[in-house]
Image (tube, rainbow, N blue to C red):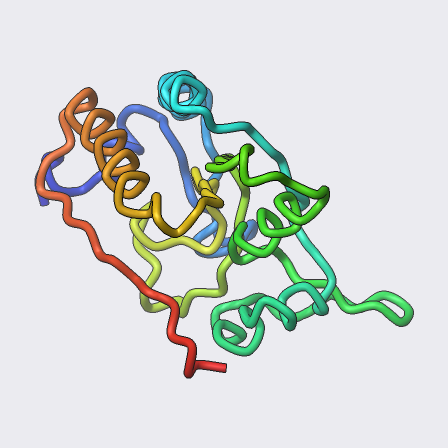
Length: 193
C-alpha cells in the first residue's frame, strides 16, 4: 500500500495519531503533530464560519436517554450507540451526534423571525459503536470530533442557504487541495417514527 492511499502509514511515520487496544478499537489518540494539524484546520474553518454568521456552541459528551428518545435518534440509531450509562434512577448515553443538543440550543429562548437564519456550529466529540470489522484508521472510528452545524431558517430561504453552505464547503476543499469528494442529500422521512 502506498502513502498516497493509506493515511495510517503517514500517521505512523509523522506521529500524527495512534490506536491502542487498551484504550479501545476506533478510539484514536492524537499526538502533538496531529493536534497541530487539527488546530490549524479548526482555526481556518472557525474563521470562515464566523464570517458566514455561525455562532459557536459546546455541548456535553453525554445526555439523558430522554433526549435521544424524543429526537428519535435512540429508536433509529441504537444499534450504533454505546450501551447506556446508568446511575441511580437516570440513564445516560454517550453523544452519537450533535443534532438533539443543537435543537435544544435553538429552543433555549424565544426567537424572532428577524433572527433567522440562526446558524450554530460546534466541534463536538461524538461516539458511535461501529462494528469492529468496519473500523479503519480515521476513516471509520468509534470516537471522533465532528465539525457540525445546524441552521434554523424560514423554509423559503432553504435553497439559497443550501447553496451558501455548499459554496463554503467548496472553498474549504479547494483551499486544502481535497478532490474526489461527493455530496449526499438526506431528507427527513415523516413516515419513519
